[in-house]
Image (cartoon, rainbow, N blue to C red):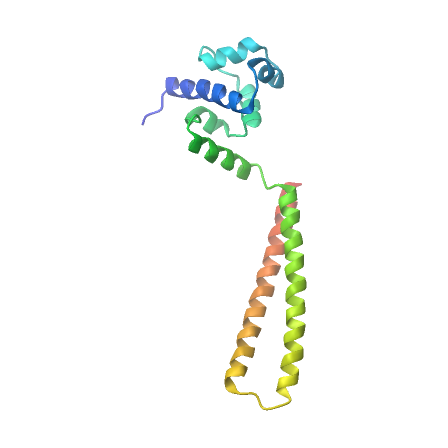
Amino acid sequence: MELTKNTIINYLSSNIKCLRRKKGFSQEELAQKIGLNRGNIASYENGTAEPKICNLLKLSRIFEVSIIDLTMKDLQDEVNQIEAQLKYENLNGPDPEQIAHFAEKAHMLADYLEGLHKCYTYKKAKLESSEVPDNVNFVFDFFDQAYDAAVNLLAEHRQLINYIRCQDK
């Protein structure tokens, strides 16, 4: 489908109206949030005026969708609207609470792995004093490899969390 200026204006006007209603704003309330008057919003929704880029950016932030999605996608379609909002969230960075949650889970995993490794080391030392069958040695080797992989993965997970925290500042 070829997008024309009229298509964009039609999407923009219908999207502003749809998203405004979904947020529960009157035209007056939306206008106040942007620093305009109600007539400006009515003109945008009727397609008789186009917002300046600075107002388009404000609308984008209020509705939590990108300018591109606001102007070029039919956001009256629920699927398009959800996709646009998810994309906007991803573009604007992770939630600090979510990052803190991931960091806490990483700490819990580290404690768990440490306790598991201590238990394993203790049991292995007791068994090594006697002759150990080959299949048990195989299990020891497998555990060592799995433990090393888990520790390395946890370290990379923590590096990623730190990287995201640094990018967020």
